[in-house]
Image (spheres, rainbow, N blue to C red):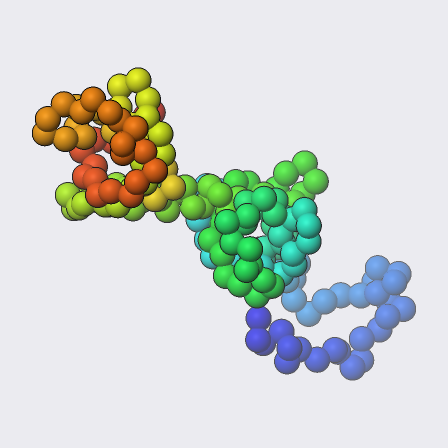
Length: 188
């Protein structure tokens, strides 16, 4: 991108020929397309990348990932971060390169979920103990928030002895060990 600032206009360019369609460029169309494509990032759908916040308004946040257009993300996805400002780097998930309007479709929420799944899988592989927040109780156990993902804690796994009052554990942060992940159903 820096070399684009050094490009000077052609001094003897004939604008009349150009307007009539007679102007011939020194480089072929394919060479020009290749030169243009090299200035853009190659992005793939379903990928997490780093982008730069370029604009913030009440409804949307515009994020530039170096693609041909900026992506628009709903401001509600950044509610957890009220200090977000123009120029900040954020992780975004590329849902698709174009929607019906030709706009790049990005999601910050899905990027956070993808990173959380990576961290959960890593904790299972390394047999690590993780911290989690007990959100609520259910019929057979409790729901625990680990890295922003809800996991199920069976009642039989809470303590060595049977637990009668599950409510004593609700709203507490505790240490847990991930024992099993069902990738098909996204269960932890």
